Image 1: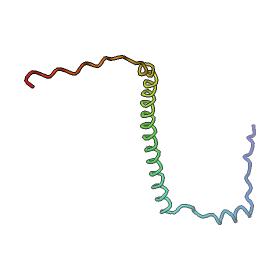
Image 2: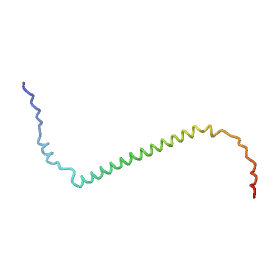
Image 3: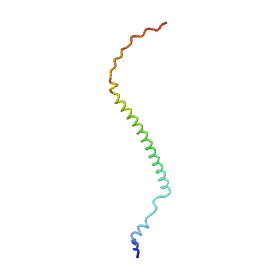
Image 4: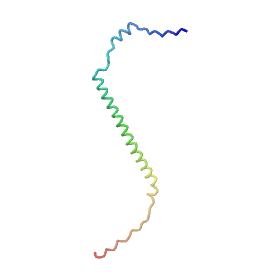
Length: 94
């Protein structure tokens, strides 16, 4: 049984001349600066995650407080008649 031949990729003279023009894009300093920026980016993402969870928790706590405050509105609106006591008698020895 014969195996099919692998397709041959043709290369033109134009492709070869363009390939000779290619140069390495990143130098040593570029790599160092890229690494520093990547570390800074990861640090920012970590800080952002911390802030989101902190503010999210604070939002949930404030939400519970507001729900409790609104649920107790009817109790706060009730009027209770509390008689005021007469002025207290002076203590002995005054």
